[in-house]
Image (cartoon, rainbow, N blue to C red; front, side):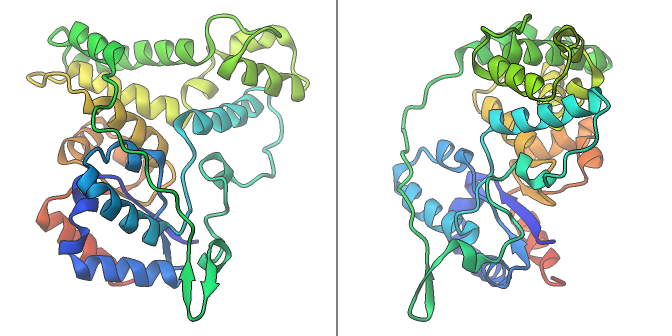
Length: 296
């Protein structure tokens, strides 16, 4: 199986031209179907500097060859469907687990995602729609400010439960029926397709099978940890950073992200639970990342 590398830190992506050895090594491994470097909507959302957007997209496109992770809510939806089958004691679905995170098979050869022009490969891309003044996550910031200074690390287990309650409420509401729309409506449709009793759906919304889905688990744990960190004020960037990790951590063997997020993933134990190797954009860690590719 190809090993997934998620280059999620825009600082690293924008500096790849300074690390030609690393880029060339990754490109060779991708072209040889040894590793995959999927892109995601977060790459474009976090690239707000118009001067860097074209270069960043070129790096990401050249390494991903169009292989992209699903949106956060799609990942949560697929995981919830699997959790529903587990809750109902139904046989595991035959569909491969990669479908939870990717629309296309990440194991297929790069040639299947490209057009051949002479001796080279080409991939059609659409320029990223960058916004130099992205919307401020007002509610997120208000929640962080309300919690700031009120909790400490011993409060973490309780805060995780609170965050899971809130996230499930946000996704599905408190009551799902045939009139539900959005994610709640899609969960209702999936529940009906499984032939499950309607009265058990309310129990599923409270069940460990749903609450322990990787997306819900990671996002809630990171949000709770940010509530409990002393001396660290809320940051708007945390809203995207926690979502990014909730999407990529279960499916990528290597994740490049900010040094703050690396520290938080280690401190919460999530890195052990999901067994990803973490690297920040520090020069020494970029070198360590490059060195780790040598045996591949």
